Image 1 (cartoon, rainbow, N blue to C red):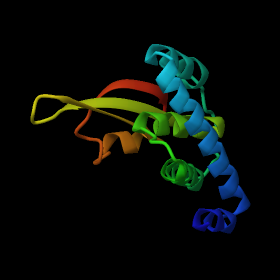
Image 2: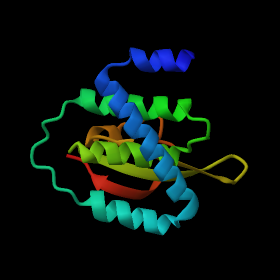
Image 3: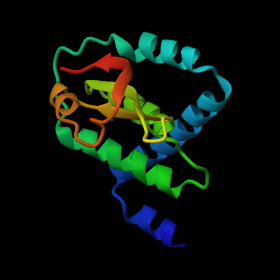
Image 4: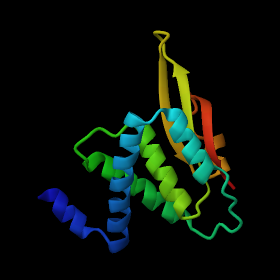
Length: 147
């Protein structure tokens, strides 16, 4: 009941973003489980990777709202949403609105010699240069381009 009340307290724009995030998390989660990543990568690269953005008219608030919607949707859904599914959903939402974004996947070696993988989305070049939370990861895959 508490979730329903919190949902109705959101603005119309936040509700729409949250619904879009839920749908994209569901679809990206299914794709990650069913389709080999090579297919997902080629689709994202072909559809969203080489989009030339001439005029960046959207404010940073839109990117923050999308990040918040994906985070809320991931926490509220009954299934586990991996960082890869969240990154795919956020990347698609940002690119559909004309916001320049880069989806990155990286790996790092842990102390016990095993690998840890992570996926995230950056919305500009500055974030990729000084990204402190993901700086330990060596980027192995990059989709999209930032301004």
